[in-house]
Length: 116
Image (cartoon, rainbow, N blue to C red; front, side, top):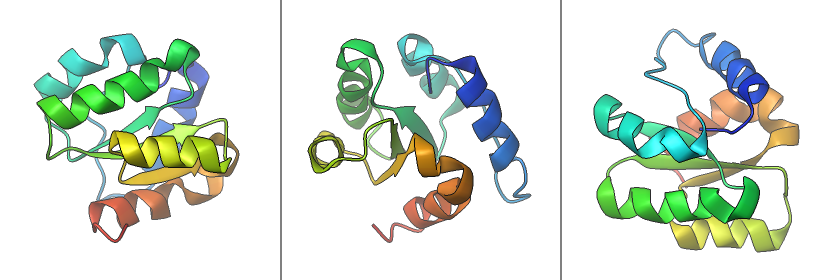
């Protein structure tokens, strides 16, 4: 879930490299809840740095409506404030957009294995 199609496309291409992972959908933050309800994913990669904090609001809603869905928070900001805000909102993992190309698959595996 990211408001930028190029980011979603790039992440999808990286994730598709792992035969054990399947993408059930991709969308912007505003359309995320209906898609999550339809797909019932194990994990959501969510841009929490979206405009007007919509990502953090969605993360809180996800925890209430779909408590079994694990969330890997993705952000432009890698500072302690944003990481702690993501943890407190319910994220199971945190990754900056700058490191996503190198670490998204290992971050997904870690979050799915509940090692965080």
